[in-house]
Length: 487
Image 1: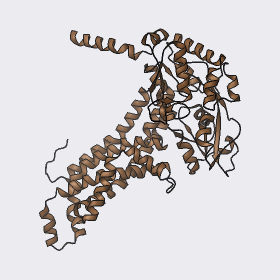
Image 2: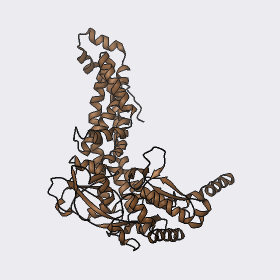
Image 3: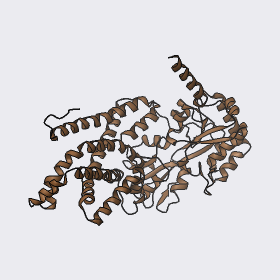
Image 4: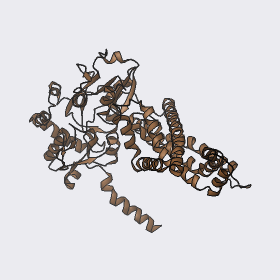
């Protein structure tokens, strides 16, 4: 026990410096200012240099470098998913969060926010030729935006159907392909990714305005004062204007910099209440429906592939083998992207339809191998005996091989369906809000990963455990053993 206590103390002591976000003195002692951002956000925020040398570019990269220089240390970028920048900052994964962090009441409750370094306007984009002239005209329509943004909070107060995305290009892509009716995002994003598309037009005027700020941990007031002082100096001596002008971002909105802007949207206190439980149940329903529909594609298609590979001619065997290896050898996430975004000019699928088809086609490859193994496990003599009795090839499969193969394959099929139930969480990348996505939205909104996580896990268990028990009962009923094992 003494050795265990010593090891725990050593572990805590070793990891403590990394686990705490540094205050100004610690930043200078370490000799670097680490800042968190997400490269997926792309230009003009932070992105890799097109030359391919691995360096970073973007107006926030230049701002971070200028801050580090004024604090007397170099700045170091830390890659992190944008939607979790605030939780990661609170964990101490980096010193500051600098990546289009919008000033909002919810963020002010959780972290310290610097003085603004950029003023943005919310821009509404629609398709050319549409009759929409304002957000009020979109009542009941599908409006796209990014999760965890002020634009998202704005849309929550309007009678529209909100469609959430993780990337900045995808909303405008779907708008051009008529999957949504409008996109509401910061003018920086709209100008670069939306307004220039020939199919779209951006409505004049700002729906609302707000500011970008730098996030600092609550217990690091000294670092906040230093960041505020450095930003104030950059505003006064014109360095910030030069940085923004370098990327074509300096406009009339920026004249208000130096004055602390109020958050454009007020949000009510949130709690894990009955409304959240209802949303979780809706997410669970989406997950269950998606999984059942996808498996309804995977099961028969996998059986066809298995028969083709086990009993077909050389061409059928080659094609089925090619299909199985391609779909098993590439990530399902990539397949969803290709199906939803890549094929959109040819086949316009809705998000749920694309998710169902993508998971179904992917799992068909796995079910093909399950079925093939079950068919090949049946002794060849049974096939020969059936043919001797005059049964046609299809009759041999239907009356002799399939019933026995199903018994052999049932345990694996059950496991695959449970796996599919969990893999359905990947479809959130194409805007399907299923159970896991609902959990992440609630966790970030509530600043609580425990209760949403437990609720999500409980719902997954409720969906998967009865299925496992049902499969066990079916195995026992279909077993040849007169006294089968029950566990």
